[in-house]
Image (cartoon, rainbow, N blue to C red):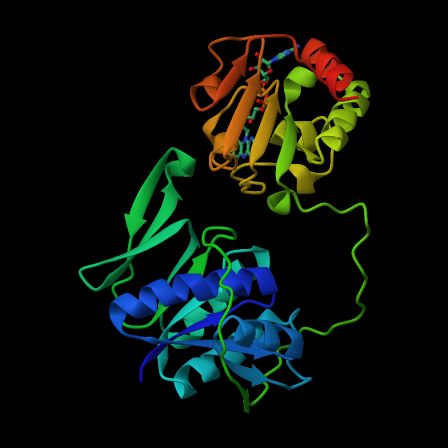
Length: 310
Ligand SMILES: Cc1cc2nc3c(=O)[nH]c(=O)nc-3n(C[C@H](O)[C@H](O)[C@H](O)COP(=O)(O)OP(=O)(O)OC[C@H]3O[C@@H](n4cnc5c(N)ncnc54)[C@H](O)[C@@H]3O)c2cc1C
């Protein structure tokens, strides 16, 4: 039976794709199949969520060699009769999507924020015009590669799938893996954080960051920022930028301090469950999307909050 293929090397994202693929599979009568590459633990997790997993074990395919991964998935898609491939739209997933689509001769959409089926088409929502609007788009070719933003769908859980081993010819590119370094504990993933305290240029000085960090810690969260805070002022690392050129975050709570709310920023935070904006300018655009507005000096607000929490 024709199917839909999912792949991500990250367990949480692969389980989210499984949910998305099931929605599509049910509507279009397609069997859901998952591929893992050199990752038995992931294969077990996916099978534990009810997926039929095809495990490729071949040391010549390394995740850093995205071209080789694309070739592996291309071969898997052909052998498994799956013309539709779902990937995660994280940094590596987006590169993979383009390469795989090119290999397969497929149409490709990345950064997809929602999917529904209409007229037997997979209708995908994506931000358009720099995040000013949301467009619904679909691929007209038979073969389709769709990369879905992390945390768009809930992770699949429960079920009993099976794992089959799968032989694929490894086609490594010229990429050579020289060294693997473990991530420093300093590195944060603001996309995975439930509470974000987000600072903008209204902070005025790097010296005020210590109080912001204290607040984030008291709330069990992390500090994030607008782009100029990292790229112009260099007060924080670029991995903490939210927005069009940074991360797209979906926290439970975002406390936004001294950020005007240009669309290039808001596109990365508008899916937060609760947004609190602290801004001296009552008419700052960010306030239009905030659930709570404090028209106040952020330094006073941080001091009061730290006192109350601390
Ligand atoms: C192609 C492109 C991509 C971009 N990508 C991104 C991106 O990914 N992320 C991003 O953030 N930006 C991005 N930008 C830049 C974006 O357009 C804005 O310039 C930027 O978001 C503004 O940052 P800000 O809100 O921190 O600063 P400002 O716009 O200067 O706003 C500062 C705010 O602080 C308030 N304020 C001042 N003092 C206080 C105080 N004491 N207490 C409380 N409030 C105070 C002010 O009222 C103001 O609203 C991009 C731009 C382009 C052209």
